[in-house]
Image 1 (cartoon, rainbow, N blue to C red):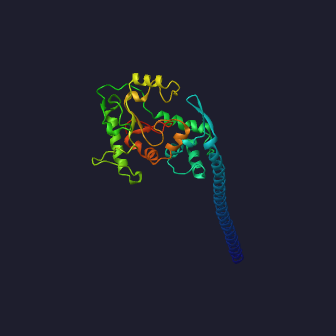
Image 2: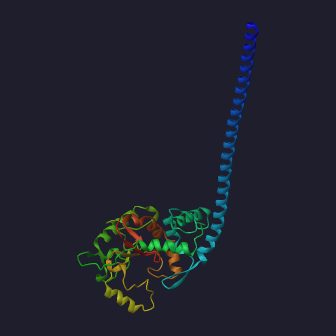
Image 3: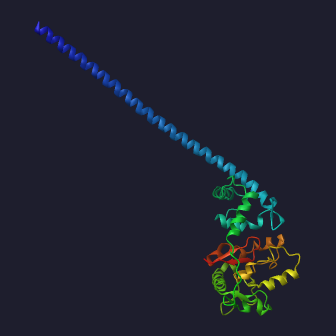
Length: 308
């Protein structure tokens, strides 16, 4: 009887062991399958993300291509207002826009549109890459915000009389050769830098100054007294307020009109179109800020010293 019971116990233990083994195998198989399924799911998710990113990238390229076509047209056709005058297009400001965006891309390219979209994001505008009227005004606002402020009349102690050799007009009256000291020093350093750029092909005399026949980069106008500014307005009663302001940055002695080509200070679009394409203007756009000079966007010849 004892022997039979022992056999039953052994048989029961064996069956239990078999059941445990089967259960263990089943659980391991399921766990392995779950792991494999998780891996497959993860792979599918990764693949989906990559596909989605690729589709987004393609979509962005298409969007910027469309924006590039619009920009190509808008640079000559976009209407907007400045100085109570209706303006057409923004082609005259392309060098400044490119410099502000830190790109050499042309307006008709998707790369330019992409840079515009980045600017739009920074300025809380719709980031479609199109340089619309609203986007253009954001550039104008930025450029204007960097100019000389406040406008304070220079004192006699702050200004000097610069040598006539630095001026575009060799017959200019001595009273009109005044300029703020620090500004003139910065201007001379800037001219030295331009001299070192052989692409400009500037002519210099034996003392290293711009030669008498060289007109590019010479000073057209510097410090102006309020009285002189008023006399200019009387002489040109139809001149726009932007040209002959009642409160002019020239009062500070820190505003320089620099010859870059074309008619020296004519704001007609045909003249400004000539000026913005000259090597001198393009050089100033890229380099003047290193010497503390900020452009007045509307007048390619007008630069204001704000310091570094």
